[in-house]
Length: 273
Image 1 (cartoon, rainbow, N blue to C red):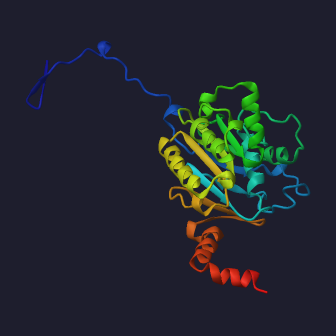
Image 2 (image 1 turned 180 degrees about the vertical axis):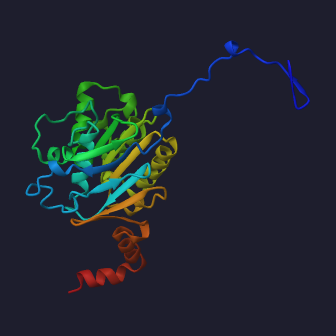
């Protein structure tokens, strides 16, 4: 027995003390898991797409992911979907959408693979579970799930083809994207089949994923509703550069706000005879 500050305590022999159980480091790490991507300069073919079009993909290109949720914004053709597809392939997903189980097509035109093979990812830890969502190919993912008889409990308990687009999308978001494991979710314009009300519901899901620490999301979007999520980083794409912007600096916010403040003025200018 030993006395410590007036209290008598019993000293336990060292060989009787149970070692403290610690979780593996990879288990305790939280999103973001993909920390950055950069260009491998010796792999870059300057005269080939996308490098001859998207000049921001130069030898000094580096994109850091500093938050669990990152939005890509920009005009069509600015490169956001091209980069997102390459990220999907770096995760082991098919560029047409789905997870490891949903290899929709076996052919590869080499365009995105060329970018994928030119990007150097930095992971901590490496995560290969998750999903690449593309609205235009989601029908094929749904068909695969229905035809192969995959467990519908991961999709809301219903066949996806038996639901509307909005219902099936939300079923995927709410059920397939469970965050009991570390996962990467890459979403290309998820708002396409979501009404404004369902986009608000999707914001709630974003917050759940953000709080879990087990999900990293990279989302290409045109939706001012989705972009309003406060705990995300917004990267604006142009052919020449990428830059971080605030929500209020996006064209999506500024144009939507101006239009809603005075729609008659906009319409008069746009459709006047």
